[in-house]
Each structure stands twice: as C-alpha cells, then as structure tokens.
Length: 217
Image (tube, rainbow, N blue to C red; front, top):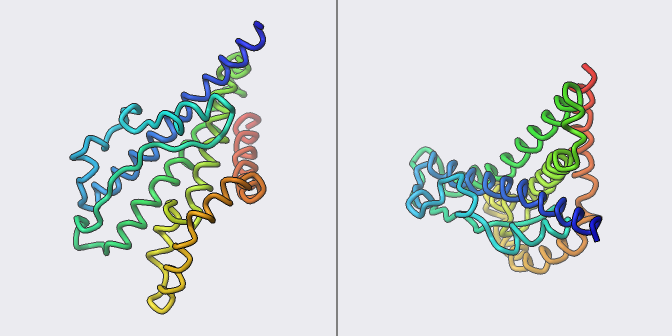
C-alpha cells in the first residue's frame, strides 16, 4: 500500500509541469496576439501566467495522474481582424499559433539545461525522486506538446501556419482536407505513439546530447 501511495504521489507531481507548460503555451498565444495589436485575450483576462485561468479539469489535471504526456487548456481567443496593418490576418494567425509550440520547446530546453547543471553540480538533488520526475516529465511533456501542436491538422497550431502559406489555387484542396480534420485528429490521437515517436525521439535525442555536454563539460 505504501508503494501505491508513493506512486500516486509521484504521478501528482506530473500536474506541476503540465500546469506550467499549458499556461506558458496559452500565455504565448495571448502575448503574441497582443504584440500584433489584438487585445481580445487581454480584455478577457487571459494575458496572464496565472495557471488557473487557463486550466482545464480533464486536460490539465486528470491526464497527468495517469502518466499521459499530453494535455490541453482552455484555448485563448484571438481576433485576427484586430491585428495591426503591418501583418495580414493569416500571417498574424500563423505567428500567434507558432508562439505556443515554440514556448514549449523553450521550456523543454530549460528542463534539459536544469538536468545537466544539477547532474554536474548537485547530483544529490537531481536524484531525489520528485526532482528527477519533475524535470524528466517536463522535458518529455513539452517536446510532445510542441510536436503534436505543430501538426498541420485543424484546429492544431500547425494548421494556422499552413493556412497562411497555402497558395490560392490550392485553397479548395486545403478546405477539403480541413473537413476531414476531426477524423484525422482522432486517428493521430489514437496512434500518436507510432506517428510521433520519431520526431519526438529526434528532439529528445538532441536535448540528451545537450544534457550530456553540460553534465560532463
């Protein structure tokens, strides 16, 4: 029974990086939209790093308890009609969308640097179960969130980027593809491990080399 309690305690630690990762992701959307002239998210109180403003009960709190390195938060509202004149609506939406996954990659990088530094200078701290779990899960989670959200499937962030670059003559094909997006998204979520394992593994491999470099420099 004690081991079971400890296991659930470690799983509960997963909520911390999930809450942080999704909060930063949504804040990045709101911040980039505000920089482009749209204050919709700010007016609704979403331009904040307060995690409970963005959190979703299932996607933010329950999934981490089952060791699922995936989740979601309440989407930030963006009104492209309010972007400044220096950027097109589709271009602004692409930049705003891209900010989310990039923020997750930045957090994964920070986790890797922290692991390397602790492993080198304070291994006694790093090998504490809670610390190791927090940083390793945070790295894995943020890489997974970044790669998943960059997929060009609506309503994921990657589709906003593709939408900006699709030429006019291909718009009909793109719109036809969009109509199947719910089924495609379900398929990706069902077979996510197989479809995303290679790009996730590639990024994690690069971060592992960074950790090794820092830890042994």
